[in-house]
Image 1 (cartoon, rainbow, N blue to C red):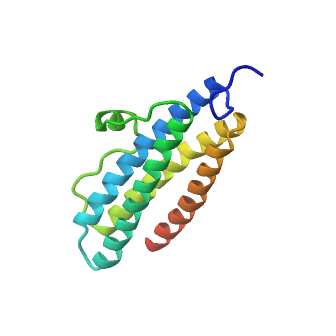
Image 2: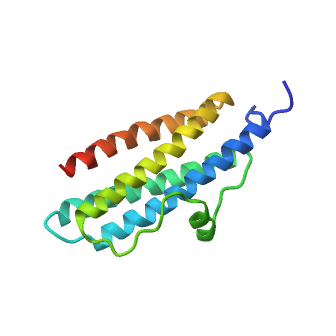
Length: 157
């Protein structure tokens, strides 16, 4: 076995994980700002319900943003920290001027699906790198977001 970083992982694999985690970080930042906008701008019959649900989403995203950035640092790398980098890196696009509940929920579901794609890629890389810390984090996120997709999708029926 060659040289390892401070937490005992191979540096090249750690760098690959950090790069994918930076993609996830960028996606979470755009998901956060979109959920915040939905919270502020939602109107209609389901205002009270959706206003509260979108607040839950952006508060949760804020926690995950910090966890992902700290994991990147733990791996010995630097998290992205400019909105320019987030927009350039994210697979989730900015959403503007959405006030209709159904459209906002559809955008939430699409955002969660994008997060899941990246998280599953990270989970596979973490498994290969024997990185239990990153893998456990991704497993938790995947489980939570799969349930959210089911719940938000059910609200559209």
